[in-house]
Amino acid sequence: MSEIKQFRRLQVTGGSTYTVSLPKTWIDELGLKKNSNVTLIKNRNDSITLFQEEQSKKTNAIALIGKKDTKESLRRKIIAIYLSGYKTIEIKTKGIEITSGHRGAIRDLVRTTLMGTEIIEASSEKIVLQVLTQLAQLSFDVALKRMYITATNMHQDAIEALKELDVEQSEEVLKMDDEVDRFSLYLMRNLNLSLENVQVLLDSGLEKPSDCLGYRTVVKCVERIADHAGLIAKKVKYLNSPIDKKILKEIDNISKESLTVFENSVSALSKRDYEMAEKVASSVTKVIEKEKSLMDSLKPSDNIAIIKLILEDIRRTAEYSRDISEIAIDETVQSVIEES
Image (cartoon, rainbow, N blue to C red; front, side):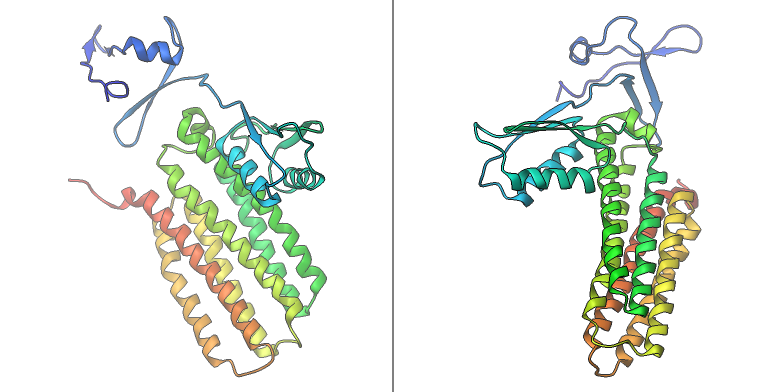
């Protein structure tokens, strides 16, 4: 415990300056010396953070693969390293050639999923990826808004494809999901780095490390909403005949209400508006009741199973939006309470 926690007494030097001594072992481990510049931050939780401007950053990670590694296991390994914050990722083998299947999987992953990542070296036994995107190049709010817009467009296009039984449009919706995944992983990477590096935290527009916990949940919620839009699109090709116009109109209305809840939840989080977030959380119940009412009124038909699954996807969009609003409530509750 003495290696990570020590007690020091404040000293007064001059009329308005206080000083505190730091253990020499800590200074040596951090690579600091006399006249090194450090930054102090007063946190909301009444603590003080001291850090050096140029903190050490993770640079290179090596991932060893073999013929027995599946494409999915390789994909998971690379994504995990990317999320950990490494700038360079080397994929190497032990004296054998990288298979064509593995090469293709790595290229697809870089092209469709890992934002700001390029293949900078490729040989028979090694492929090197470099993350070129600067840390926190996009603030959290800006990147989240792009995710939200793409997820909303996916949902709207999926409903339009449903109305027109347009399989081609539904397939385009599924392609948009890659963009949401790219932003999701980018934000997760920065949130992970923000826990280790205060400068990344500040550059991302966040105020304290605990923000990362709630915002991680928000990112996953938006990603799930996009997934449900994709599921709606997938079901279009399984419809045997057009959906009854009356039912289709009700589906469309519930869909629009669900997207309104989604929009308001993201807005409440961005504006840090407790009252708005509270209203969003309360409004989700109405969407769920309408979905249940339509579900109960459905009569047996060729498409009833698919319609029920589509309604469930729309309901889940509203429920994930409520989760986002609850994060906004947690983040802003201090604005409506008094401490004694």
